[in-house]
Structure formats: structure tokens, C-alpha cells
Length: 488
Image (cartoon, rainbow, N blue to C red):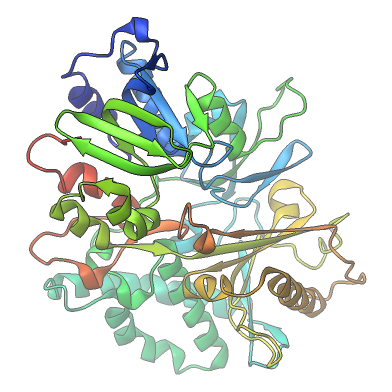
């Protein structure tokens, strides 16, 4: 779990370090020893190690990572001096307090604004004067139809009023029995009675709200809506990344994976070191890898994804985690996220798809094995100058799609994307992609899902442990501790 630097420093500075002569990885009685071991070399693990390195340089720190590269759910495909992000790909808010801006700057990159605010929660306007998205829907025939722009704009205004209504509704129902879906249902009847287009847009807007939190709207706690704009991101524009102007470094694409790799350069990271057992007590922690290697340390910080901890905590920890921690873990949920990126030799769709995003609300032919609900189609030619189109499924659609054999998924997704090109009036024949990449976190046993969220159905009205879904990583660190000080 990611801990605030002040808590890390105050807690870990209370014990004496391993003598510096041990040099952290000196062989001692058949095992390796360190003051602190960090499990996971994703961004949380890397930043945790860097924090200790900066504030407590006398401590020996090692990071162990199951995969053979750092980054966790950051995965970047370089293309020229840019990259397509198959995992984490956005800076949510370019406010100066956002630490991701510093991370990118130190890696020789800068933020490139794409939309003026939180695209998922607060509207559709882009930074370049173009619409941030267009909405398309199908009646199940496979034929896509564009929803009129004025309908989308009006629906946005209606949803804004619905949010205000929902916040008032939250104050009236503070027992945990009502959820965001209940509140929106009260408002929906007025809007969707207008017609089929309006109904399609409203359904997509509801999906979009749930997708941000990784939940359906009827699973969202009303507490999420009591403070306007409190969605777990920073203020300001949402950005992708690009190389800094005048950056002389060649051969490096601007990507989040590059940024994390740059941060990890000064750390002692052991790749291909998959932890299968964590034995902990008041006297210290012992880690054992799948290859039989062992690390003994005074303290251990575990930064594994919530989905892994939920599925494996009983087998991973000896003894079992305390009941308070297990209860906190089980209250969380993992959001589904599946991205399929099609790379082409040239951006032949530029004239037909001028927007940054295209939302395809529903619809698939009877021959398809899944109803391809494309929450977002990302136009990387407009966003990053890369000849690629990304199709994103989020939530239940992603979990359903993860069960489909990959080759069939690519074939069906490509067929629907081609129908979108035709529907938008693309003047050129649709060529075959030169490359297709798929992110499927749901079936990866190192992740078991894309991002963590908070399930209102598990909320304890007497003690709500997650003020914002996107900050649920703090559950164990701040509210499920055993007494005043974390043990082990």
C-alpha cells in the first residue's frame, strides 16, 4: 500500500538499521538481508523506495518484482518520439501539486493537455477547440448512428443538474441504504422520455460516471457525491505526455513506462523475484520467492494490487493478516479495463474522425460472442500523432471480454471498428492493421483487475473507510492499522 512519506519516515526511523557494511545484499547465513523490503516495482513501490532513499539514506532498501520489468500496470508501446499507453496513460489534472508532473519532468517529458478537465466526470470540451467526443449508438443491428451534437450537449447539462440533485439526495439518505444509481433514477425519467437518442446518451453518461470509479452507478456510495469535483484527481486539465521541447536525448519515446524506469535507476530492484510467502512478526519479516530465495528484513511494504491481495492473502501471509486488514481489503473492488490498440501504417481516418474520443454506446451483431460496449475509442493520431486507434472497454464489459479467446476478440473488435470507420464517412478503404496489442488485466494473475474502487454495498455506515474511491489505496495504511503503529 502507498504510505504518505511522513508516515513512512516516522515509522521506519524508530528502529536501528542493518549495519551499512552489510551493503543490503550481503550474503548472511544463506539468505539476503535488508532494513526494508518492498514488494512490487510499480509506481507505488518505486516511489516508496525513493522516499526512504531520500529521507532515510542510512537504511538499506530492496525492491522485489515478480515481472522482468518495472512499472506494474504501466505499459508503453514506443512510436517515434511518442508512445501508446496500454496501461496507465493520463495525468489527471495538471495542478502544480500533482506529483506526476515532477515525475515526468525528471524523465525529460512534459504534460500535453488534451481535455480541459475530468473528461469522465465533468464534460466533453477538449483543449484544441474540437469536441472531446462524439457518441454513436446501435439498435443491435451492427449499424452505428451518430447522436446529434446538440443532444449530447443537452444531456451533459442534464447530467450536471442531476449531479447537483444527487448531492442533495446524499444529504437526505446518509444511512448507506441508497446509492448514486437510486438518485439518478429519480432524475432519469424526465430526460429519457424525450427519445431513443436521449436514452442512448443518458445510458452512456451513467456508464461513464461508473467507469471512473470502476463500479456500476448502483454500487457507488452517495458519499462520493457530497463534495463537488471530489473524484480522486487533481484540479486542472487532463494530459498525456510528450518530450520536452529541445530535449536532445534521442531514441527515447515519451511514455509513463520510461518515467517509472528513470525513477527506478538509483534503486536496488530484483526482477523476476515472485514472492510466494510473507512471514511476519514483531521481530521482522521474511520473504520467500518462487525460486526458493529468501529475504529477511525489519519492515516490509507490500504494494501488490488489491485484486491480488484479495485472492491470495490467505496463502501469501503467515500468519494471516489481522481481521481489521482483511475486512478493509474485502470492502474494495477491482475495476475492469481492457484496451485493444490497432496500429496502422498511416492515419487514414483523420478527416472522418476529428475528435479526440468517440463513444460507442452499445450494439453488436448476433454473430459476435459479446456485445461490444466500447466506452471510449481513443484517436491517438489526434492526441499524440501516432497512427493508432485504441478501443477501451471498462467495467463489466471488460470482465466479460476477458473471457473471450484473444484472437477472436481481436477479430470481432476490428470488425466493429471498421463499421465505425464506414459510418463516419471515411473516404479510404480500411486497411489491415500492421499490429494489434491487447491489455487484459483481468486475466493476469499479477493484477486481477485494473484499478481499485470502493463498493458502497460493503460500506459500514458507522465507519466509512474510503472517502474517495480512487484513494482506496490508503485503506490499510490509515484506517486498518493494528493499534497506533503498523506491525510487521
